[in-house]
Length: 190
Image 1 (cartoon, rainbow, N blue to C red):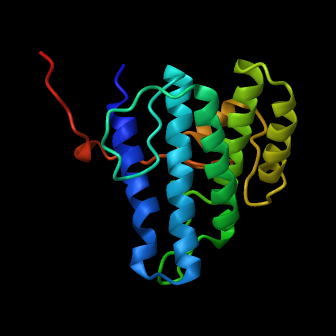
Image 2 (cartoon, rainbow, N blue to C red):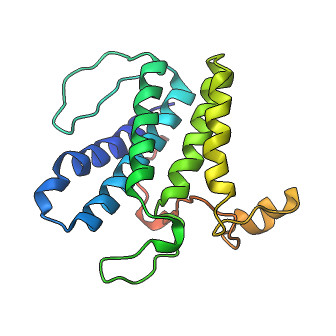
């Protein structure tokens, strides 16, 4: 495994987080883009600690120094902080709008529910893997924020997760990454 792609994306999120104030955006757009960058960075670091545990923690876009591994619990604290701030900044799914004010319906754009859903997973992971059962309560509270949102629909049967949610045909979608294979970097290892 290589964490190269995760850290390339973390670097891009850090670039936005560290420089967005320079754009002179209206407060609403600033919060929208900052919330997205925080949510994406948190999602990436959650993937990193689940795969590798302790890992380099890079929070500044200018940081190009060699960095040792940070304990996963410390990284998890940054993930939680990013997601709580993202949830504060991002609007609910039905209020996501592009710069012209048109509704955004693609679930690849994080909204408040995305931040809460990832946060619920982080708390559950901390509770189970980190043996901190009190985190289950926090995870359940955050999951409740998503389950109580009328813009998401729980699937009725497990098959629906495969037949409707995964192909992108359901309001049960919380966050998805759209993949364009024509833009993917590939390397011939042969």
